[in-house]
Image 1 (cartoon, rainbow, N blue to C red):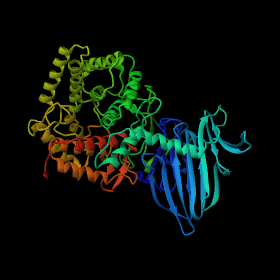
Image 2: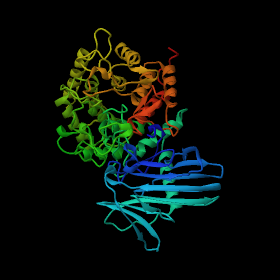
Image 3: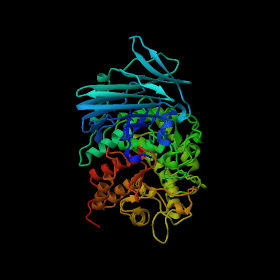
Image 4: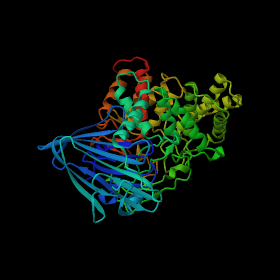
Length: 595
């Protein structure tokens, strides 16, 4: 039976993440990095594609939670004969998963089953027991460059390409097991010191979280979302992943299955804004350094996304051996959208770098040079059609939001010259800014309704138009802004949930449909607050928070009809949109009563 997406917990170490079901199945883990091939891929197939299960057959799950301000997962079990607490985490200094069970009363039995499968479930490794320097034994799984080492007081036994064991525990007794990745030609890694690993992991998460400035009624949700954004940020490179998974479907059984384990300039820039709003300035410096490395070269070759290490080559292919989550195929790795033209990323990046500057991140010769080169690319290409923020796979179009974000990129560069004395051909930039503005107002507004439109050749609206309110392109009380928000509410919403656009128009060139987009739903909260509908904004926000997982996590989309998550998980764009909406509500948007 397929585990609902919202039932998964996530743990991670700033390099990769694991997804664990409520029944103790570790169903997804890529090692050593988030975008490495999966060593456990049952999420997109069956247990035969890689799974590490840990069960208490005579006890039921009572509840689960994260230790405060961490990604240390705790699960409480209770049965007629005994109870236990399971702690699971990934330490910051190793490609490792640790699972600790302690019997809290009576007696319990742990059943463990380990199926290691490299290459997204396609490679069965060679398993061998090895002696270590301290005369103990470990279980080693080797294939090609990968080796996983299983450490425990008692090792499981192999049968039919899996390893299993049963461990009885009495009150006060622990069972501690770990799985550590290393390159196969390296020596067998030593066993972790469990207590110190737990303390170090706890300390790192809590120390990072303590640097934030929260201070409002939505604090728990904001903290968990900011922690999730940090979880998806590579601690070595500063690259921010869009999600921890690939190919979780936007439509169950459909083809809209994408690999989100990469660094989108847009999502990263928006994440940076969210972190800056809550006092995380160091992350801005880290991301700017990543950006300088990733886009180095000809500005005409700037991509919309990169690998977490800044690599450009992200070829998309399908994995035919995997049946897909809920039989949703194809299962894709890599992402062909890396080669698309999306004008809006220039505005998002320039906006994030402007906010970093305002927050005290000092400009350097290299960082300003990067921005002037990005602006040169805006000047050269803004008039061209593009694929838009939603990465359509149909024909390029003149998307209104893309044009406005090109305007915003220029606006931020002009602001930098006037406010910070940075060098640049400001008169040329100002003329281009006005040219784009005139073009948008002439072609991007429906003359009959007065609202902005998705692209120049339609009267349809698009939820991305809500982001225009962030740019200052028009005042929030401008009738064209207000009617755009009202049309999106009328045409793209079910309750508090918002669709990106109407897929029946065929604008995206894909078959089938999709569910409501969490980011768009939080954007509507932000927009409502900014146009003065504060009471409705708060009601929407609080209703959306009620649809989070029990651990405070959000996927990409929400299936309103079946009250379930859809799309990749956990999704950075959803969490950063939540944080931005909370910040807008906290910051004192214009007051307004019930509408």
